Amino acid sequence: MDGRQSHQPTASDREWCHSAVQDVSRTFALTIDALEEPMATRICVGYLLCRVADTVEDATSIPPAEQAALLETYDAVLDPESATTAADFQRDVDEHVPDDPDADWRVVAEATRVLAAFETLDEDAREAIRPTVREMTTGMASFVERYADAGGLRIQSPAELEEYCWYVAGTVGELVTELLARDATPDAADAMRENARSFALLLQLVNVAKDVRPDYEEENNVYLPQSWLDEHDLDPDEVADPENASRVASVVERVTDRARGYVDGAQRWLEVMPTSQGNTFAAWAVPFLLAVGTMRELGDRPADVVREGDVKVDREEVHAVLALFADDFDRSTIGAVRERIASGRLG
Image (tube, rainbow, N blue to C red; front, side, top):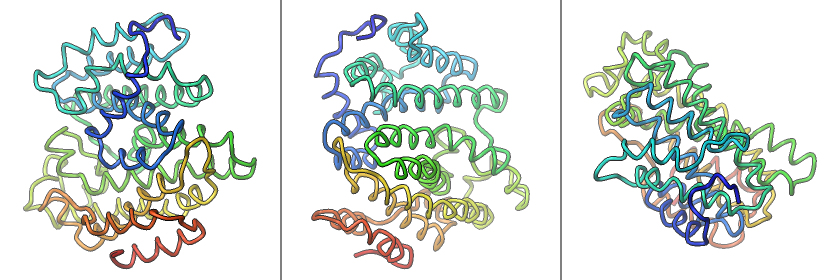
């Protein structure tokens, strides 16, 4: 155990993490539920470590300079060469935890437990997880500092959008890849590393496209590139106004098209991924297929991103996708299933 930890790690810390992730993200919880041990706990803990940083970065109630300082402290906790402790971060962040915290903030309020659970993982898992969480954290800090005067993120270009997506999702794809690559053949490991970015950016760009309104209203962040908004005479502060739905829809379509460019690489990542150490094909194929379905919905009704504030596949289709993996699934058919979903609802 790392002597800098202020909380003695116990099995209950792992159990707490598995319970917490169900409230934090039902979508990601589906992935973890589809995994077996030890991968389920590795991914669960790694995800919550990332979620702590993401919650701090999204907090509109924290001044940007303090956000960046908190993220830098969190990064230092994860640095084996640093004397900064989990208690140091917890002390600094506790004053920002709301009186009635939501699921995300409950995880931040228990960051020492998440960090303690991390210390219970085997050394190989810690070495795979640590650098990616640190890259995410420092990348988020750089964006907070970059837009400190704007009061929220205001992405300027498609290239900057993908840079941001890399920090918040690409690093997670890299984390998963490094946990799995050790059990893959050399060729498969190379293919996973080559396509991990595609898998992660596909999922994150779909999130950017569908969450325009809540991103602005809840976090004061606008990820739609300013250069594309300019082409439709849109100010970032106008993206959540239903009167602008048709113009915002044009930009949403461009983000969705950008996501489509990563589908082939994401599928290749899935096709070569080993199922070992408790990993399962279903855990990652389900979010891939749901992203494909969401892109179809975004293509059919992009303006609903603003008008309705939400675009997603319906429950019936989610259940149909999950049912595909109730029995053994032939991964060689993933391309055909993807095409069925892209062209029409499954089930």
